[in-house]
Amino acid sequence: MGRRIGKIDEIDLKILTELSKSSNISIPKLAKKLNIHSSVIYSRIKRLVKRELIKRFTIEVNEELLGYNVTAIMGLNIDAKLRESITDALTKLPEVREISEVTGRFDMILFLKTKSLDHLHDIILNKIATTQGVTHTETFLEMKKTVNPPIYIPAEE
Image (cartoon, rainbow, N blue to C red; front, side):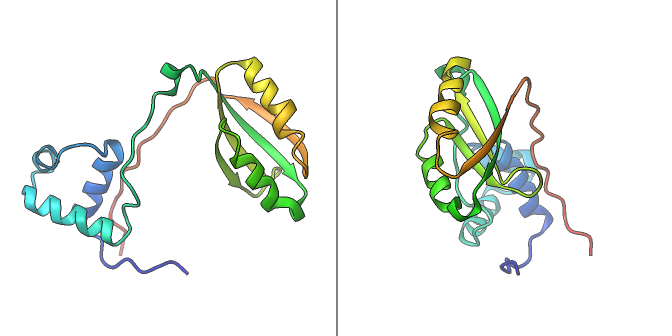
């Protein structure tokens, strides 16, 4: 059962939507955009953080400018008894950005960033496929990515 967060209104949802697009927007700019007084925006954000609706403020790095030009998504089948040690080993690889345990034909989905196809090939063959308990891998190269930023809407009552 989920944690109770109390009442969330339309203003909170608008603030969350705008901060999801750009967490470094200034409070005055956000206040002007939403046509709400700055002090209200400030207190609402503070309350959203306290209630843990906002987990953290962060940045999105343009990894392509750093040379990470290859994005891959990898499905893994694993020995379930070794799940924890596999996860521990994979999180130590700097190329692994995310690990999701999933249902369906794979047990885990990995999201990877590498500097080249050769680099990806090396990581797959020499690091991931050789991890004890990994029984099968299938790799998909990202050709193009479209991101749909969240728009938070009030729940229907």
